[in-house]
Image (cartoon, rainbow, N blue to C red; front, side, top):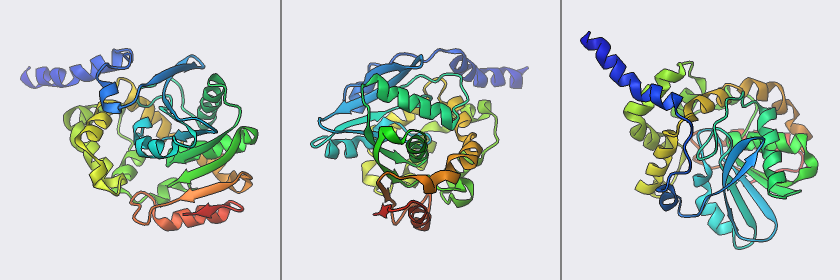
Amino acid sequence: MFPQRWCVLLLLPILLGACAAPPEIPPWFDGLQRQPVHTVTVNGTRIAYLDAGGGQPVILVHGFGGSMWQWEYQQAALASHYRVITLDLPGSGLSDKPDIAYTPDEMIAFLRGFMDALGIQKTALIGNSMGAGLVIGMTLAHPDRVDRLVLISGLPKGVREKLTGPLIKRAVETSAPVWLIRLGNWLAGRWVTKDVLQEIVYDHSRLTPAVIERSYQNRRRPGLIPAAMTSVRTLPLWEQGFALKIGEISRPTLIIWGEQDKVFPPEVGHELQRSIKGASIA
């Protein structure tokens, strides 16, 4: 009875989290976010986003496990010249986590619907990692809605084979059940969050306690882990679809890749550049 009772106690927070509906944006979050959060409903799903500056629109799209928080330094730099919009994709951050398949086509439909809801007919798109994959898909599916694109560390063909970051690779390749991942996040989420951020961010001085805490709190949002794992398990659909059409991109393309990138080595970026006609790399 004693071991069984402890198992119940360990699993209770997970089960409660699984049953809880995603709460509204918590009052403490604005302090960590440092900017007011806006929301808009797209296809019945509430999308949270930041909107700063004026001029031509630029939408920044985060990657796997990311959030709009990751763009705060770029947003500040770009907002003096552009209208800079950063969003939490469905299933991420402060946005709703609907029970959907999170296929590339569904995510493209959400991005297009987000643009429609904000009255944006055409925009520059900047995507990081899996967000770059979404930007590529949007450009191929709706080229009339994309002015130009910037791809930051993503997204190449053969994602799983080219990943070198051990923690990210483990997250992408895991076959662990969602309940076990939830348990690990409950027991060691803050430490794991810090380790992952240190793997993907070169300048660790940017990883202030507030940044780490904000990321950790996001990881604890109800519904985030199932949505994230469902999303990453759609990578084969990306490989079978848009990854085969990267060479058809006709919009001006800039690829940005870090020389010390621990997730995808720099050669992966050069390979991506060679596959897109006229693309430049920095």
